[in-house]
Length: 251
Image (cartoon, rainbow, N blue to C red; front, side):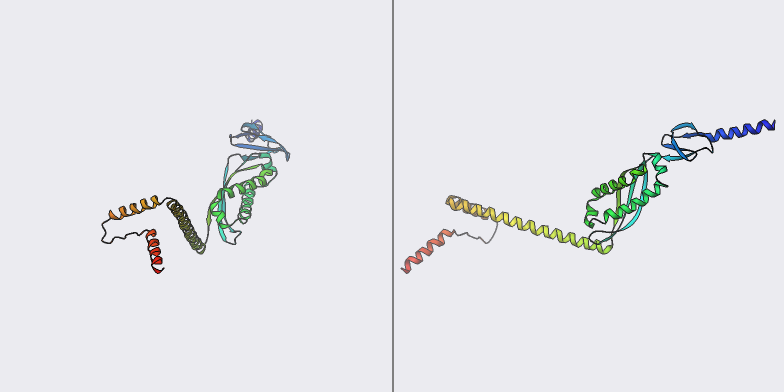
């Protein structure tokens, strides 16, 4: 009885070790005597123990948190930047055969690429053009990890930390920029107002009636105000008449 029981137990263990079940989001890379044989899954399949060996690969998107990196920008400002990378395995065969640990390798190359790309840009570009920088980093990472069967779908720069002294310098710069814009806007307003005044004076000089109407309008506006002092505008033509009269009396 014991003689028959031992082979049965061994057979049961062999069958249990042979049966493999993989969910939809996993694949099994099977090796036969050390050589690549194929990719199995999902579902139920069998492998021969000892002779065949299987490495499991997860096909779901992986969220990789890139730790903070010290970056010197192109304008020599030291900042600390961290990011997040989203990638997934699209070729299980290459992910197992071409690289020892694709997760660790992707993390290391993401850190290097983050420092390399951001070091080519100014601080202002890091703060205002994150979308473009995200696209540049994602493109470079995708090209470098393609040989490993990895697809980098997205890269997001989460935070750019700068020193307190630099924060105050940026605030002063922004304040100076706002003052410059205010002065330019005021100067442009003065220029436009002077142009309109020149146009109005030109129109009034061609039509004396317009000047008289403007004179009466000014008097009407002044009479509507409760003021104890009234400024009476004197037309310039009257001064010319006085000058002509003075010149005639001298003659």
